[in-house]
Image 1 (tube, helix red, strand yellow):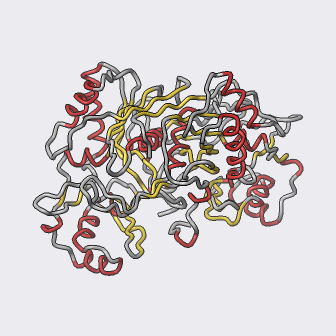
Image 2 (cartoon, rainbow over the protein chains, first blue to last red):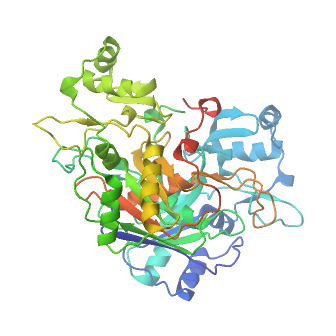
Length: 257
Length: 257
């Protein structure tokens, strides 16, 4: 998992407010350079989903949305804006659970999550219109694109994770998870390795990218003190890189959807 | 969430193999001192469940267990050792899901988890007998006991988390979570705070202790390189301390058990 005996996490400061069409890799490289953070082997850059989505222009003006009959009926049932429900459904494979003011869906990328990740917080109003922000179209591709650009500039083998705060079954409170990843193994499979006493570990597949995403969330904050980029230093890995899609449990092995 | 712009995590080295009856707080204080780590305000010590359970003598020799008829029937159904299933059921409120070689229960403390946390890895064989290790009887009380002892020695207000690796609904791979906590808020509730654009955040309760637990897991490792104690430095909090029981979603608000 980790080669050293310590980890350091640095919030990357000085990023401008991200706008649609921005060159996010260029903004990140500039912010890292201004902070004197030269990327090193096995550094991981964790980027909040919101700024990736903003750079990719994944906003929807709800005033332009015409809800379907299905969205209107569901919105009335759970007490949400029908246009917002329309957007959520358009991002979803199917509805998993509903309750008043709660809509848990399977996102088209397989994530089981509230509101398909469609978010109205921290989105700049334009002409007085509060827009909704969708998840990146392909967060693994976005992570790979950022990784390639940042690795090219530094020469180091690095990882990039795009994280988001997810609610969870059985537990209260959100936790950062990886919705996109590149350059590092999303899962670390220890099965078949001996434990401290030579007994073979039976079940030990670690959600490596999710644990990194959660760690970075501790520094990111959520509101007025938002810090959307975190550098994690001190990790190590030997397995080949995969991506965050590997963290999505296929429906056939999932007992809870 | 975090006052500073960086976090440091240190694996605490040099802890001896923990034995039943050991004074774990004393062992931790000694290991910290030998490493020159003087505890500071808002430091968090994360301790792996296994060494807490070991110190508390939470081992069961399966040879001494007589399975009930219920345990035997369930064991035959899913292909596990009936004595192990008996121990698991004795730690559980109820069975949530079963599949061949998989037993997900609601632990008596409310955790929805595989095998009620009963673990046969990293437990020293005694007289050739591989023992099973149960979760601590009351992990929040264990965390509070460690916190009180370590805080007394240092004078600093610190947090203590007892973590374990849990499987998750919908996602592959385990992630560290907090089964016990003291001295820090397990949840950080940002509801009602304005976002970057003055819009009120609707749903933002962060699983603070779980994110810390996941971060520490990155350094702990699972097998031959196990490092069961991690110091997390650089966090900040203003809410009053709670404990990890706060992270357990009450059954009445849970849609997935």
